[in-house]
Each structure stands twice: as structure tokens, then as C-alpha cells.
Length: 520
Image (cartoon, rainbow, N blue to C red):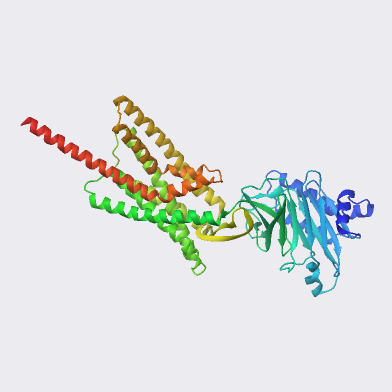
């Protein structure tokens, strides 16, 4: 009997023989128990035990027919008795109404490894999950149709097949801006989750707009991971060039800014010291960022890459912290009339600006040092072609939770605070301009001051935090330009303030001379 027709008949009739129904009660009851278990209050289920329990029951119960199926609400199981003359198997069906369609082709090579050990009857089990409850990892990942398909051949570990297993997933979704990736469930030892999704041994193809084809050389649990499309190679080259040029110019500009500060420093000015700490953090960030892809090479020891990734994270957090300190200092200067002196003000700010980020990074290292290390960036080889892609590496973090909390969350709060301060400062300047009836050149100077404050407070990072995980092309280029040239913009701001202070000092001296002459 054709196996494709047998599966369709199996899915529709659900076993009419009473003897088979009695034999199938144990796996079916276990499947219903799996569906109820996650709903129990104050109980954390062991999903790996549920899966292995189902596999054991399907492999060991008495099966007299060539194939049999079990069906609960959102778990469907299929069992097949095979032998060493296995010609291959093709399965195709729509499991239930409005459920995703799938098809699987097992090659004849599937049983060769087991038959080389000893000739015996084998059992192939296939399990379809219409929900992903049992496959939760540390990342909040999205799977196509929330569908997982698994297969196992007895107690054998089937891997490295020369002819792959073909698994087709049909869908009615628009995959624009997404790259579907075929993955399998790789078991890991962890107290919070029992596996992660990995693409090793699987190749992804898209024969049509409604089909994703997975070609895998082993048996496991498979799904299609929905990821944002990788950056096209040409676009990445352009963005990388802008970043390298911008960061290099920012490094030179930061060094010049610090040199000018040391040259003209004559009296204690807390605000200028705050500016220099911000410039120093930007300098460290740019240097670490440019070294990151260089030290991610295979010839560099992994501890070196881990250390650089931690330094890069520390520099980024320090940069965010000093931006927030700039906003706080601006509020104190403009909003407070009295009691603006604080004892050891700059020293306390340095403890916060450099110490808090260092504490957070050391805390992450103490909890889990593997957070920092090699981070891969997916790059497509051409526009709109996801059939092949290559990876580029850098020394950074590879943990979604830490990235969300200590990069997006930390930076987002900084941007939100400084954005509020910037709006408040703009309203204050507009009110003062209206009261003094400032027009012409002075009004333009106020607008330039606002633009300078925008750069100083780092509110251009808002472009990144308000992107909602997807960058339009224009926003991506603006974000890259503004933040890679950030050190250069700070240099221009410092030069403009230096010119302003020099002009104000000269004007004061001229007024003093004029006053003394009039008194004579």
C-alpha cells in the first residue's frame, strides 16, 4: 500500500479495531497528560521528561499493524514498523482543519546504520506538535505556524546522512523582511531550559512563496525559525565603511578635544570636566568597537575576545551613563538658582559614570562569563536571496536577556531621560527668548545651542531604541552616521563653546576698559 495514502487514511479513520484501541490507550493518555500538565498552577513541568516519556511509549507498545496514529488536541503521533529492505517513505497530509500542511520524505538510507549492526525490525515514530510549549529556550523566538515536527528511529542516533531528509512546511504568511531558517532542537544541560534551536546539519530552501523546504542530514525535532532578514552584503559593506570612517574620525576628534582641554585648562570647571569624561567614554567605545571584529578571528584566543567584549559593553554603558550625567548637570545649571555647589561633585559623578557600568559588567561575568564572546552576524549574499548566507563575527555578547536589559533597557532609559531634559531646556530657552524679545543672530545662536545639546545628550540614539526591532533603510543610515561620528560632533560642540567663552571673555574685558576710561 502506498505510504502517502496510508498516512491520509490513518489521519482520517483513527483506528477502528478494538484491539488496537486498547493497545493505544497508554500513548494517547500520555499525550493528553502532556497537554494538561503545563496548566497546573505552581508547577514547573519537565518538558524533556514528557517528550522522552512519549517517545518511550510509542517505541515500546505492541503494534500489530504496519502503521498507527494517535491524535490529541495539539499532538499527533505516527508509528511505522520498518525493516532493512526499507525503500524510503513519503508522508503528506493536512493534519486537521486550518492546521498547517506539511510533508516529509525519508530516504532509503535511513535504516542502513541500524541494519549494519544487526538485522531486525525497526520502528519509526513521527510526532507533530501544533504548539511550541515543550520547546522553550532562553530566547523569545518565533516559529513558522508555531509548528514542530519530530522523528526518531528506535533507539538509534541517525545522523550524517548522505541523502537528506526533506521536510516541507506550507504557510499562508508574508515572509517579507524575514528569513526563514530550518532548525532542530539541540538538547543542552541547563536548569531553566532543556535545549536550544540550532541550524547545524540543515539547509533551508524556498521553492515557492508559500513553502519552506528543510533538508537535514539527521533525525530530531524540526521547525522553521522566523528571523529578521540578514543584512545584504553590499549594504553591510556600505554601512561598515561609514562606521569605520566615522569611528576613526571620532577617535582623532576625541583625542584633539582632550588635548585642547588640557591645554586651555586654567581654572576648575565641573561642567567641562563632565564633558571630558563623556569624550573619554566615547573614545574608549570607538577603539573597542573597531578592535572587536579584528579580535574575533580564529587565530585569536577566545579569552581575549571575551575580555574585549566585556570592555566594549563597559564602554557602551559608561557612554550612556555620562550622557545621563550631562542631562542631570544641564538640569541643575538651568533649573536651580541656589545651592548649585556640591562638595566633590566631579569625583562623585566619576564614581557613578565609570563605577556603575563596571559593577554591572563584573556582575554579569560573575554570574555567567559565557555571555561575552564571539557573536555572529548573518549576512545574505545578495538582495532578496536567502538560499545562502555567510556570517561575520565580532566580540560582543550573545545572550538575548542581558542584551535586552543592559543594552536596550539601560540605553532606552538614558535616551528617555535626556529627551525629557532636552524638551524642557528647549521650552526654557524659548520662554527666555520671548521675554527678552531676541531676534536675528541671537535667535539663531539659541537654535544652534539646542542642536548642540541634542548631540551632547546623545538623543540621536533614540533612532535605535524606537526602531521596534526593524530598521527602515533611511533610519539605519541616519543611526549609523550620527552615532559613528558622535565623537566628531562633540569636538565641534567643544570648539563652539570655547569660541563662545573666548568671545564672552573679550567682551567683558572691553566693557571693563571702557568703564575705566569713562571714569577717568
